[in-house]
Length: 497
Image 1: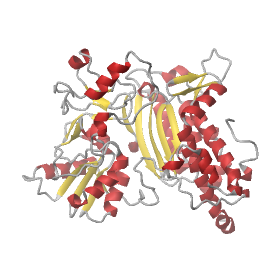
Image 2: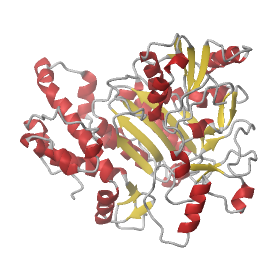
Image 3: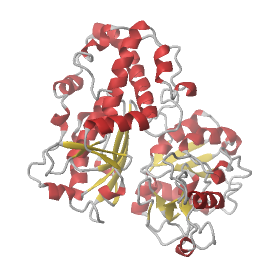
Image 4: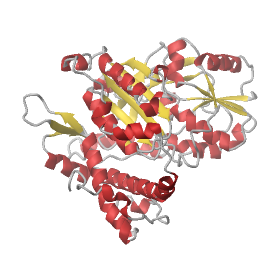
């Protein structure tokens, strides 16, 4: 499969009208069948399918590029799934066989974008109104034009501290309308490689959500590049970047991609928009609200709910005192959780919080749209910003993060316990069974006895497979988490705690 689109294909983009309004791109029966997707399109659209699939493939391959060592003749290698590929044939084969689902979704997304673009092209042409910002960006559309000048720094300066506590990890998001998320994806990939940053960045027409790690110099240059880029400079400020100790070693690789949502809630941004969120409270304002809530003798009968929007394994090791922490595995379950427990929120003031604030943006918008709450508030900047101001405040325990550090420590409180012996313990590890990717809390003493899986079932399964051939495929859930109710129904406001 070729790694790039043929010359002239992009110019031919507007030559045909896309017609596939009846095609459900979320239909699960299509997920593993590119041919089915193509079959649903009419004759003229099928020509664009080939272009879209090639573009999707090329973009995914490009995100896997890494600089080759200086002693190699080649300029670039590729890294994916913690494997190193030194030629195009091998990375192409790997992407085609191991990332077919991603190619499919990306192809569908590009086709969807083309349809939206072409359906409005006539009206845009007839209006012919000049947009100074768009004109300026068009004239400087080369990715290289938006990369910082690093000629005065040596590679060692950019990389220094990547493998130690001298580096940093940035966490940020920006909700704003992006007309060309594919270009932003290419720019972000080039920018991060330029600065030797690793991490994960999600881009959509609704904005960007990223966490990247590298040296302090590299992260500083990255923030400057983001703040100077015309599309973001009016929405982002320096305080929007949450900084913690870490570095490039906190992530196995760099992953940049285009998605429908910048945080996966499972509902189209066109149905629930980030533009209608709850009321933002600064860490200081939120602290006062929590203080007032905790001072009430009967919190069950209180008119306020302190709601944790994160997953159960996050709130398990750290949370605000007196909060309601839903026992859900994914944020995409949050809307169903709200629907199932809607009466719980009727006529209540809801104080919502999450790690960095992004889940609350659309989570609060969803809750507000239900029309049952008296008021909906959210913690601006999330727990991250709160702990910067109140490390000994009402948040107890560790702050879970989605990288290889697993958690950040701001206080000495330990809220969780070892899954096997019950001793206080809050340091996660991956389940040792190859087919399971769940997180497990097992103390050093239990680890020493060989208890390294998330449950007895996985432990037994791992022991049986130790002597057999290893399998590369992963199950999303093991037997123990499969028994967990997908959407819990709360008996009372604080049944969880």
